[in-house]
Amino acid sequence: MKAAILYAPQTSEKRPLTIGEIPKPQLKTGEVLLRVRACGVCRTDLHIVRGELPAQRSPLVPGHQIVGEIVDGATAELPAGTRVGVSWMGGVDGTCSYCRRGLENLCDLPTFTGYSADGGFAEFAAARADFVFPLPDNLDDLHAAPLLCAGIIGFRSLRVAGVEHGDHVGLFGFGASAHLAISVLRSWDCQVYVSTRGSTHRALAASLGAAWVGTEKEKPPVALDRAITFAPSGDVVVAALSSLRKGGVVAINAIHLDRIPEFDYDRLLWGERQIRSVTNMTRSDAHDFLDTASRIGLRPKAVAFSLGHANEALLAIERDSVDGAAVILPGGG
Ligand SMILES: [Zn+2]
Ligand SMILES: [Zn+2]
Image (cartoon, rainbow, N blue to C red; front, side):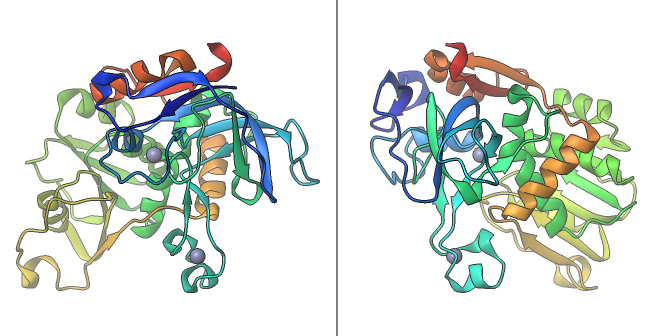
């Protein structure tokens, strides 16, 4: 099969992916074989190809936002031809103390699609049958793929923040995750306050129904019930805290923060305010988000690339030169 393969980490300019032929994946017990119809490109893929995340296997086929149809390993619940999505969490051990408590997002031995297992920048991909999500018909391939990472994790952030119907919610930063989360929040009748750098992001937030839009230096005009921060910056976390009502929650949607600056406990945290981090996702987050996305007709902006242009897709993400999400369509090239 044709695939985009990472043999050694490189900067995006040096075309890290080799487009070539490799054998189709051999299925292990409990796996299904997918003919890949689309695979989204995520910022995490950049960290992987550049070697900023330590290599887990080599060679590697990256890609963790896969839309595919089942062509082998079909089961009664997942008949051949079923169109499914695969996300970053490709599997958990099911036996560690976190899995046993229903906290599979915190599993001690997870499998990450397109990182510790081969992913979807290829004509075919193997996936654990219990970690694929049947896709609603009204989410087409190109527009479903970008939902499978940023969308699901953004949705989990809303849960971790404890968002309730009608809440005043602050979004600090407005990238891929936030611009999907705002539509979910609007469908819950929440008032959304967006602080972000960059006038194009502010214009997009306004067009998607934000009640208020400001720069990263401005404060929302109301006390927030919940806030979600997306920037890898501790200053942003403190800015979010300073806008929070008593009993409110800040959820941090970032794998890495530069630091947490010193802040005034009496004024910013006392009053049962909470700071929580958001880590990975569970299968129920994925199911519930995809149901919501289908119901509200969520349609992210997406631009198609052929598999032969996988390096160009990475470069476009790196340079922020693509208007929306980049999605590889292996059938189209
Ligand atoms: Zn991702
Ligand atoms: Zn586990």
